[in-house]
Image (cartoon, protein in one colour):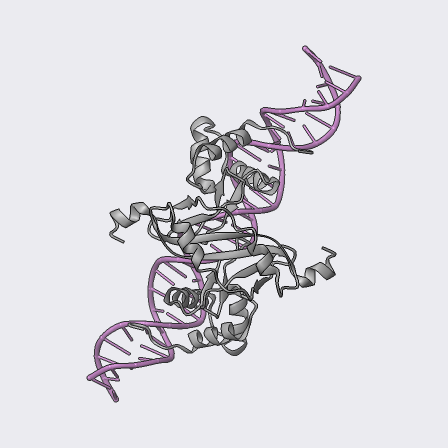
Length: 131
Length: 131
DNA sequence: TATAATAATAGTAATAATTATCATTATTGT
DNA sequence: ACAATAATGATAATTATTACTATTATTATA
C-alpha cells in the first residue's frame, strides 16, 4: 500500500473485525479495541475503518438504521437486517453476479456491482418477541 | 389514516416527490417545497417524510452516501447509485421476489423482503468524466 | 356556522454520527 | 542513528436528524 504505514491501532481494528460476525459499528469497534489499547481515540477508529474500506480490506454496510456497520470479510456476500433487534446477519447464499447483466439491459451506464439487504425477523426475535 | 389530519405542507411534499425521479434528500425536498411554501420548516419536512415512509406511501433509500433519499413511488423496485456523481436512478427490471425464498433456506429467521442497490457509473459520467 | 378536540406547524434547541485540525509520536527507508 | 512522513490522541467542527413547545390549522359535531 503506497504511502501507508503499519500501526498497532489499525492492526487491532482489523483483528477485532476478523474475530466477530456481529457487523459492529465504529462505536462498538472503539469499545472493543480500547480493551487492549485504552488510549485509542474514536477518530483513529473512524480514520482506519474508512481507509480499510477504501482499500477493500473490509466492507462497509449502510443499513439505514443509524450508524454504518463494518464487516471484516471483504468478499461480496448478502446480509439480513432484523427489524426486531437491529442485528445484521450474514446469509449463506451465493451472490447472484448475473443480475448485474440483467440490470445492465436498457441502462446506459456501467454496472460494477450490487448489494442486497434482506429484512425480516431473526430466529431469536421470532422466539423472544413472539413475531 | 387514523389520527392523521391533512396538511398543505404534507401534500406539497407528496406532490413534489411524485413529480421527480431524482430521489431527493430531505434537504432537497425542503428547498423545493419552499418555492410554494416559503415558511415551511425543515422539521416539518423530516416529520412528514418519516410519516409517509412509515405509512408506506413513499420509499426511504439509504445508499450510504450521507443523507437518506426518498422516492415518491412506493412500489418495490431496484436502484442504481452512480459512484461518479452520486445520482440514484431507477432500474427497469422486475424485482426478484423468489430470492427471498432462496435466502430463507438454511436461515432460522423470517424473510419479509429485500432491497438491491447496484453501483457503477451512470451514462452521464461515462461521457463527462471519461469513465 | 360556531365550537371543541387535537393534529400539525414554525422556530429553535438538542442529539447523534462523522469528519477535520493540529501538535506530538511512531514507523520505516537509508 | 537519522530524516521523512504517516499515524495518533485530543478536541473542535460539521452534518444529518430528532425533540420540544407555543401557536395555528384541520375536522367532526353540536
